[in-house]
Image (cartoon, rainbow, N blue to C red):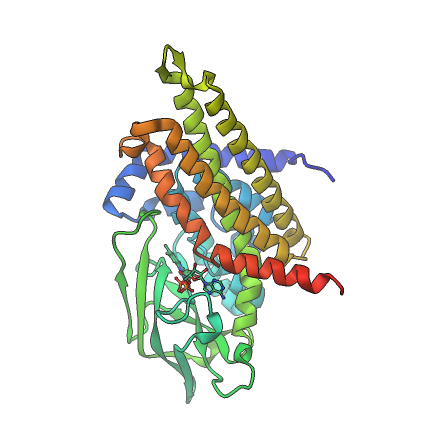
Length: 384
Ligand SMILES: Cc1cc2nc3c(=O)[nH]c(=O)nc-3n(C[C@H](O)[C@H](O)[C@H](O)COP(=O)(O)OP(=O)(O)OC[C@H]3O[C@@H](n4cnc5c(N)ncnc54)[C@H](O)[C@@H]3O)c2cc1C
């Protein structure tokens, strides 16, 4: 097994680091405090090829894989999770179109993303259907040549800024299997009857836009179906098998950024006549942080490599997402602790990292749901 990055991968990582270090620091605090979505940053990142890196070149992507995308995500989140989140989520839903869309849909909806002319979203969660995706009740009924959609979705990333969404709707409520009742339908923002409202006062990733969506007799052509009718649940599970790897990379990035800030502080800050870094208690914290980060990174990279070979491994993806999320939360906590009272104050980045880290344990499958996936796979593999 070769653990070294190729020259191309090293270059991508370096370019992403330089971009983030150059563009993020000043913007990060402003966007966090003002809950401001930085549209221009998305355009700039797209122009440099950072958006849609794992999409094929014929749709404007860079034709690289999930691993390369993870390298970029990690570097962006290391500098600022809020802005990292804006850039990582700009194409949230593109994998669904890439995996299941028709050629026409790919051209129509992927190209604007990679050019930075549009961002998209994926609308799954509803007020009464979060972890239990099969409980979704937003309905889509056929009427002539259209789907007519009614319902609402909550906590939708890019809800106020996306040009279009992949929306999972109840289309076959009578099917005997709860997992064969839903379909994925693409809904453009400018359809009559569609509305979004911004959700304010999030704990973290406040640069990222989050909204509630409302569909009132929204009509879209039958041709906006993505994939197969009745296959929406399984399509989203396949989608998450891939996108959760990136969420793992987000966790690794947060943890790495938090640890680096803690080390810098520990070397500079003196108490009892010595730098904090000279105390064994601090040294052990650093050793634990670094080891957890390395373990999380290895899980994420292995999961990404499997996906790049066309064989995403849902157990490994769930392990990577859960463990990287826990690592982000723990490391941000310890890194803030090393900052003492200064860490509690808004003028230090670590306060933001601490708030931002929690989301990794919640979205795209909570840590409990990841553990259910892991344990189910292991119990199934184990005979007797
Ligand atoms: C900032 C943000 C952005 C988001 N972006 C999107 C988006 O773009 N698109 C989208 O569709 N959704 C999005 N979400 C929603 C997110 O995916 C859900 O919040 C998440 O899946 C959990 O669903 P829930 O909030 O309804 O919690 P619930 O499902 O109600 O879960 C509450 C708690 O119960 C636990 N639990 C539930 N079921 C079980 C079980 N069977 N066994 C053990 N424990 C269980 C959960 O793990 C959790 O701890 C976003 C959320 C946030 C906060």
